[in-house]
Length: 109
Image 1 (cartoon, rainbow, N blue to C red):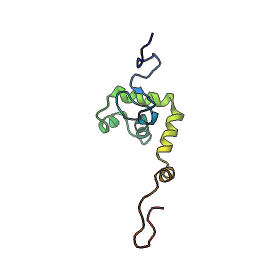
Image 2: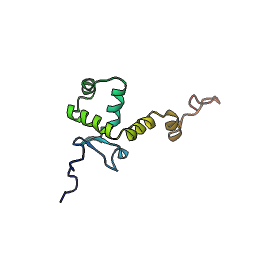
Image 3: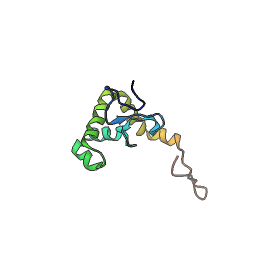
Image 4: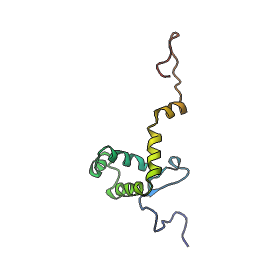
């Protein structure tokens, strides 16, 4: 008897995932704010309080729920972070359109 879009007891209250939004990545419910940046920043040493100052549009409950979601889905989120920071893959996916001037090679390979 659950209606579409209703939360199940096991669903995180502030994190959602939709196939057609943000590439299916987990985001803060009702926003397009991905979970991964919130996780990446604590790995750099940021506290929740610092995250809230950095992202004032988020509430403490949203940040804590995103961190909880990360711990429940750690391998998946870690892979997302790894892919986001893979410069070589990004350069292959989006090659430079810059051309070298006057016969000189471009600065970007």
